[in-house]
View (cartoon, rainbow, N blue to C red):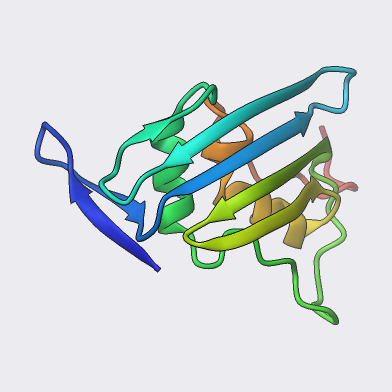
Length: 135
């Protein structure tokens, strides 16, 4: 469950209801791997080595079930979003997390984009082009 808290500027920031601590490892698919830590407190305080911990915590708090896998038998578009892969482990909102992310089809791209601030800090979520689309 998530709650909200007010920042110094008065903006409301979503926050987990229990302290959360995650390790995020992202492989960009081009030979570079980054690993960050992220902590998100119930009062909205964010920290760790993640490049933008506040945005990452807010994205996770705003997402419904941010670490849930795509349900079996879900029809997904066969649209490749890129070679990026990520692993997230730790605790989120009092629950153990061990999640894998990739961009191998439309469902996985949507799942990645829902927590893009966690997995691709500073990047804007993108929708992949169909494989047969003209360039």
